[in-house]
Image (cartoon, rainbow, N blue to C red; front, side, top):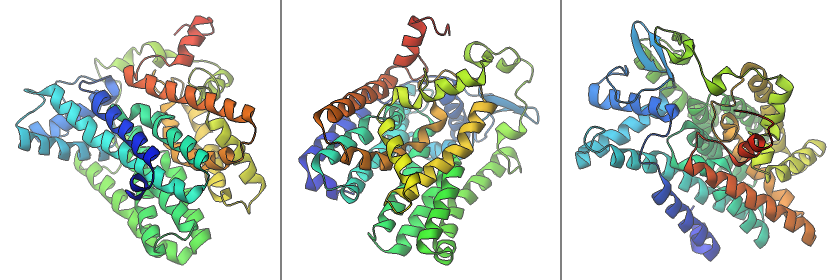
Length: 419
């Protein structure tokens, strides 16, 4: 992946800015209940030798009661990996959450979120050399991948969405290179399978994209090769997930959020507030997810270009990007209705519809053909404006991820909503 840095000065500048962004903006304190749930588990594992979080300094609403004890209601993979990093920091520096909270959280943010994001930027730069030969398309899409989406914005705070996006990118990256006959096919299948299996351990709905990518790999390379190489690799992170889950829950293969009691005495969920009390019409909720105050397209308008490629790919199965168009379409067909009809709080007040950030790798791949087709000065001007606004909204997150996005502020100012 370092080839891209050696080839192009523009890439080096973009990567340098990404490194500065991570170093300067990475969080040094907890930003909300979402990250406190994970910090509580990490502290409990390393400092107290348990997954129970009663003794942790980090209080959170994202917890459940199970067999008389309190646990964070999060899947086990991310806190387990963070615990390894925290144990290393503790061993190397002597700093803990007790005597050096800010430096520990800063280092955890950089190691566990910032570094994966930087690898994502490098990988995207490398993949772009395969996807396009046009210099301006390369530059536009590199900026879009590095700074113009919510993977970037959330890369400086502790969250699972960035890691799920990076994991799915690993699968998409290898699937694209396999389709272009770059590298040994067995190695590409192994890597694609491993990362496809890893993504759902961070974000369960990403299993839909992972499954459809497996079908795409089977169609492209043959079912036998896919089952021989990709499937066993996918089983490694999935097995780790279930083993960790069994350890954390004292034997259950189901995660805490499926087996625990949210409404224990004193629980926040007995009297939820703000976003967690919303009961809007589903048509309005769907509108806001797509083009409203949490809109996929209103907050990140570069995805409108990806949508154009999506439509082209569905119409023309022979197009080079058609496979990924169908994977994205199928994933949306599975996950979007579920989120619309089974949720109501937009992800608890976070900026952007965070539950679908992991679609970013597929959207980026489909962005490239649309940018390549830009011809007129007006088209480039509109596309540049879309990129500028996408970068603005993504970087706006770094200031307050659990606050109001620019579109949310506009909706409030217009009196459309009052929350």
